[in-house]
Image (spheres, rainbow, N blue to C red):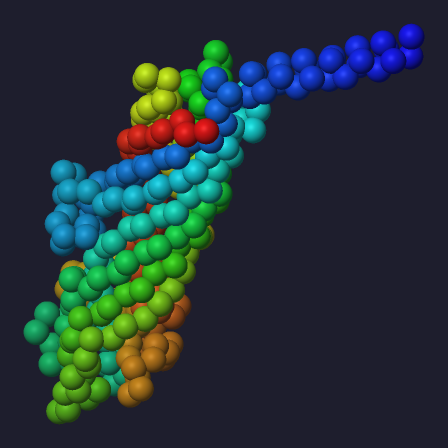
Length: 269
């Protein structure tokens, strides 16, 4: 009799586990491989091709792998790639902190400086209403970190009224984190092919210092170059010190702030 009870318990456990497996996943498959394209308008700052305007776009390519944890929740890891260009200007250490049109101490404004960002992220998706992972409307939260290399094109950095020092292309590195909330919907075709559309709102952890920087005449200069090309505080300015990375961070800020996503995925196994 005891053996019969044990057999019944084992069968019940097998059946319950099978039922759970059917609820979590799609046709027994729980991994989805994705390739997403996130775009944002480059209305005020140049995109990777140097264009600005409402019909010019920044982009972030984000392949990812996703695991269906429960009927309503999926989690995943992603890689982010984003190229771009950014504007940069440096004042000299002998100047009074202002840039005026045609002034002999004005340093060159360069707008075609380039950066390339590689990042990683982790996310969780919560399906809403009648949606069940991997299909339906969802809210996604994502934590990401971007690591970038940048190049500032050669420019004139003038140390005094009579002496002009030429600075070669300057390279550097930096990083910026961010948190994103995404509202979207997943569609499934042929039981394998998933297509996604979404609107996302990002909260970068930096990029604020030069976000509203005005490049026009009589702009208050924030950074300047010393003799060894390192940024130091302007003794004539009440504005806080800004680094080269702050200019890149402001560009990434615009890439990440608001975007539209189009994605394609494959329900793999």
